[in-house]
Length: 492
Image 1 (cartoon, rainbow, N blue to C red):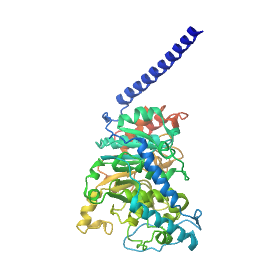
Image 2 (tube, rainbow, N blue to C red; image 1 turned 30 degrees about the vertical axis):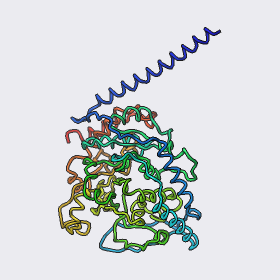
Image 3 (cartoon, one colour; image 1 turned 60 degrees about the horizontal axis):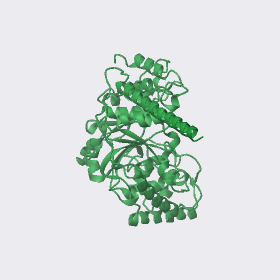
Image 4 (tube, rainbow, N blue to C red; image 1 turned 90 degrees about the vertical axis):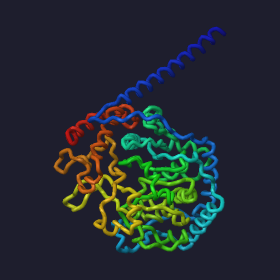
């Protein structure tokens, strides 16, 4: 009996050992396959060594989150979720003209005062003794969020990042363990000096009353990232140049926070300014924010980030409605500058207007955009310091350098981008470039960004077609991407 038990134990250990060896060999072969790589055109990425800063222990993040969650719960808005009477209409921003604010919230004076009291209490607390933010000192890196259908998109974007020569480490935050994909997180991303971090390992370590999801992920990814100086990029934001240069530029070094504009006037409710104890600014003061790209220092702007956390923790029920009133893109986008304004912390809001690129719609006489172009804050700042405001008159100075293309709608996931027409199909049913207008903006990008983008889309489709979990039941992803590439870009 004893010998039989020993034999069974040995057999079990042998099987486990064999499975470990098989898994290791599988990952090794995948790694070799990926780094030999499928090559579209003549470009292939170099191999990037893993250069991540030493991440503080998870217990430090859990302790910080426990203190923060306690403060967030203590200063709950003290009223039921807000309701709207309608959705705010977006109007294209014009710094030379005012537009009236329309209040669409059902809110009694009693509830406004309850929220004002809670807001004041939270602000007073973070000013006097806020929870310490956790980060590796003197570190900098890129933070993003992904998972599910966004995994292919973020791999493509990180490959575009590496084409700029950037070697900054990247942390890809996933909401839960269920979104973790071993081959992507253990092989594909490390080869690009990127790593997966599971947010729920931190936030679910202690009880909390609000479920964190969707737009709320951004601020908690920043808070629980490794880096002191953070470049946050949406999964579909494509840098055209090495973004580390932005952390060395005057706007960031002087302020510690840089943001980019959206197309629209503010649609904030006047009640928000009562609640936050601020005078309402003129609507021509600045455009709304587009937070697909943010630069922020956790060292200098800890208080701002903690107030952003408050606005997002209670965002879906209260503050998103107060700051946007249902307007296009409602979510975290207005919470960053709103928090900095309340606390009087410095920031640089790029004034160069965002430009859309996409297709011209002759029926509507407008561009139907599938991407947004954002500009270099360093060049923008140099003009502003000379008293030159291109936002008022674009003819006053040459166009400044484009820095990001935010390919935000629809997502350029090769398993779905060809569905139901979309930006890759001309009105006559033929294949077409997705970015045919605004032609002047496209030409000023300096490189054939769309061609480079599709090189990485095809690489991802053809190397990882059977790797992404979301693609397991789909067919012809590589074939469709290659067909489109040959139709539109071959020889271009």
